[in-house]
Length: 166
Image (cartoon, rainbow, N blue to C red; front, top):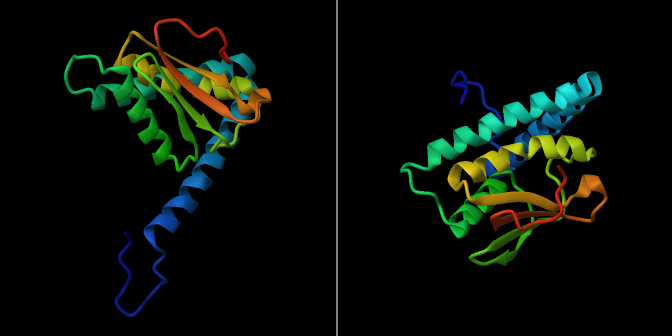
């Protein structure tokens, strides 16, 4: 916090209100940057977004996975829920089994309009999941930028999902 002189006061905004507003602004800014990169550089821009997102996801996995033991699908699913909650996303876990976890999000927090940008951005989640358990797959079965009414972020054991946005 910035310290003010004792004779100057500003209204203190509750942390949850401040956090929600700042986060929403940052997400719109990221969306704008991604769109500008994609507009200017096309596929090379998407490659850059993917590269940065993959690196970030791998860094998160390394920092949270303290030992070398892979996390089971349920633990990874709960961690993804935590990631979504940190982004103030609304949604619901639709499936939570030992073979499949589906997280439904009715509204993109960014909100992306191009499926290509969404796919490049969600390389972060894919890298995070692989870093927590290399045997898990992460795909988006339903995707708002692709025309679906909601997004379905899905974890499975192995390559069992036929439909992705990649």
